[in-house]
Image (cartoon, rainbow, N blue to C red; front, side, top):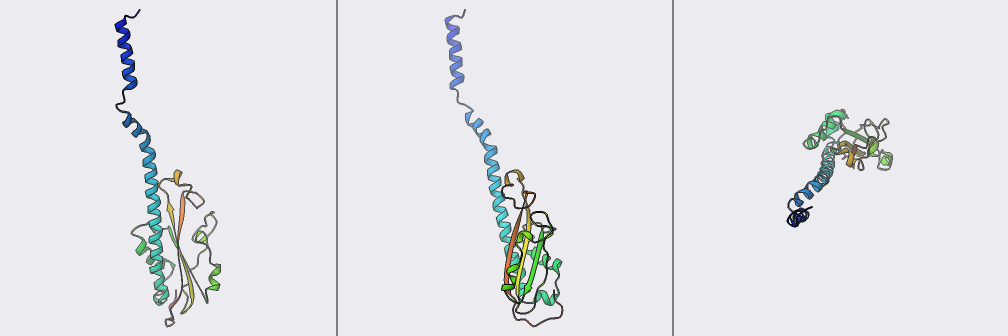
Length: 193
């Protein structure tokens, strides 16, 4: 049998461990921190993705100016060199190699441009994995032109961000940028793109 002193000692020991709160904050922090960190990193990636789309739109507007003023036609730019012009601005933020596609189509008026494809269908492959649409035609003076550029964003957190993916693999999101304009009435030049 336990003596009364030993009984009190055990009871005091049990109550001491039950009411001791030292280290609880560290344990709670260790439980919550991974989820908080994952959430913060996903928010940061989403913000960086949106910033990249803004940079792509800005670079498309700058490259569209070359077509609108007739400089691209005068210099005889092809799809590869025009893509280089788009990537010159956007390349500081994104890796343009193999991920940026450019679609350029010219028509007599804007009504004829109503049949341009969605940015999801432009490039080597569509979002569903089938063959995509490619076109590169700068147009002449006073023609209506549509310019679409796309960039395939690969998520760093593919499991969490698969809800935001719009490509066949759901680990990639296709970002798109548009520019629709009428070419200026520049003098017609023989080397055209």
